[in-house]
Image 1: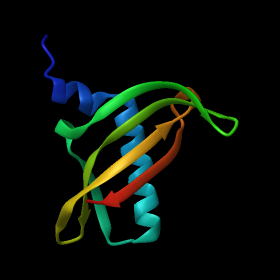
Image 2: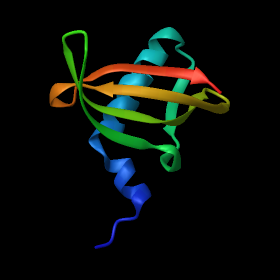
Image 3: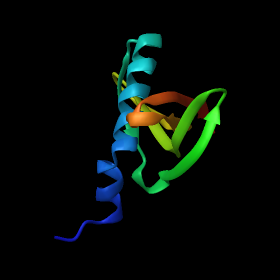
Image 4: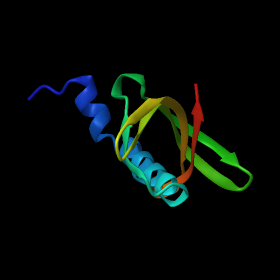
Length: 97
């Protein structure tokens, strides 16, 4: 079986964790948010061996995502997501282009 790069990125556990965490945080701030659509072509997952303070960072995910509200999908936002030990999301940050 041959997997396309997009299929691999969609299944990457780091990307899935960032999406789930980011969607939850966005919905807590704004309940009208229905979904977070990750632009698979923009995703970069980089292994890391660093710390923020005393907290280990094991991966950094960068890319673009579309925030889908009940009736519309906005323009893409850039995001940064830091992954710590055991795949735990430490930070998901969105910024408008």
